Length: 84
Image: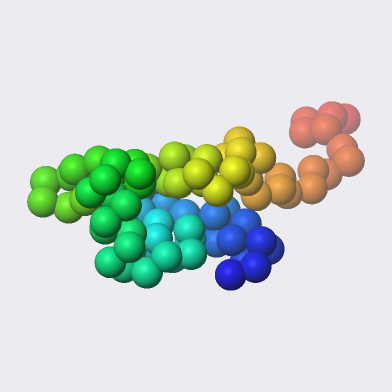
């Protein structure tokens, strides 16, 4: 994945992602991702029987600041509401 592709995907990620998806973002395969999770190298949380990765932590592993990944705001109109 190129950096632009990673950034574009990062902007659309939910709060938590699967271990497999986190591995793909980090450039590793499924088995390597689960092994990294088992070792504690990949941050995970348990949700029932599911093993998930907090997206913010995965982005931090990539050296990305999640606060700077928000989509750009829509342009605002020049006028004020209710102005006469």
